[in-house]
Each structure stands twice: as C-alpha cells, then as structure tokens.
Image (cartoon, rainbow, N blue to C red; front, side, top):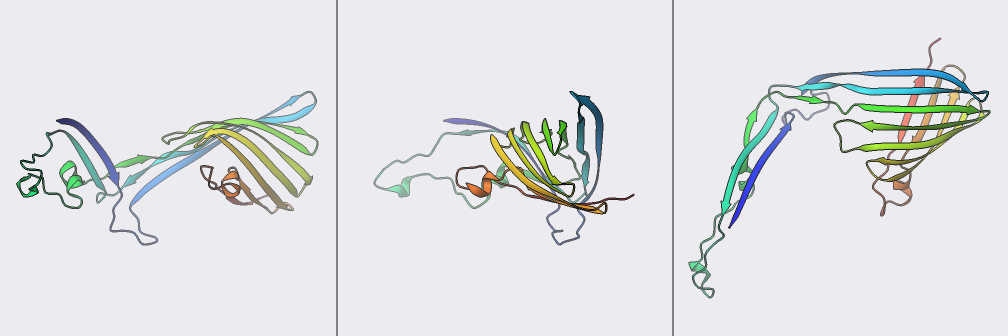
Length: 219
C-alpha cells in the first residue's frame, strides 16, 4: 500500500479579466539608490547600492485560491483472473478529477510580495576604461547570489561599449555585452544583454535576455 501526505497552496489572479488594461489588483513599489564616491591610487571611483522593487500587489476579491491538506491511503487494485479483466476492480478516473479531489477552490483576495533586488557594486575609473565588480540578489525568487565583474570602455564621451562576466543567479556562468549612446545632454540609449550565451548557444545554455533602456536628462 501507499500512504501519501499532501499539502497544496496556490494563489491565482482573476481569470475573467484577461484583456489589455484590465485591472486585477493594485500594487506599489519603491526603488532606492546610494552612491558613495572615493579615490584610490589617484583613480576616482564610487560604491553603488541599488534596492529595487520594494513593494507588493494586492489582488482583488475575485482572485482564486487553492488550499488542501490531506492524507491518502492506496492499496492498489485487485484482479481475480488475469485472463478475464472484467473481474478486475479499477477506480474510475476523469480529466482533472485528481485536482478536483485534492483541492478546494475559493475566491479570496491575497497579497503578493514583489521580488525585490539588491545590487552592490564598486566602479573605478582608469582613463577611458571603467572597471566594475559587485554582486546582486533577488528576494522571493529561485535566484542565488550572483557575483560579477565587468568594464565600460568609452570610445568617446557619447559612445560606450560594456562587457560583463557573472556567476550565479538563475544559472552558472553568464556573459554580457552592450552599447550605450548619449545624445548630448538630452537623453541616452542603451542596448545590452547579460546572458548573451543564450543566443549564441541556445541548445546548451539556460536562456538569454536583452535590455533596452532610454533615459531622459533634465537640467
């Protein structure tokens, strides 16, 4: 026989509102940034601390909740005559019958904590080259501490090439490349990937990501 102890908890936003612009809840978040300049061996640098997505989402009263805590005992099935399966005793089963028996569906509001991000880094300037090292961590996620080193090379004050090597996060080793264009003192445009190996070797890597950032400067 088999004894099975089960405990299931799952929350889901309202399924009826799927169209663009539909509101299933209300949330808020804040971002914090600290910059501490320093000088070492006549080279200027800074220590940067980012804390992003500190907040939560409160889902509406029509959100769905599955909760179940039970013990099941299974002793198999009986066949009296192997040549005559009509005498066998089987339990009837239908699609989704297991889920319906295991879980109780209820409508209730719930709150989700956002996956806040902590990033601590140190940047040192060597002429046209900037050297960066640091680590980051995402809370409430399947994410390990990610350590990274990288650099920025300024071909001109308005054009920069970035690179990065990291270990940890959602995978193991990751490699990044990017460019940044600055249009005088009005705005800048950045295009980068911290997991470029996912696009070069998609069959043997965990995945890839890209970032596109537009920043407007105000005097």
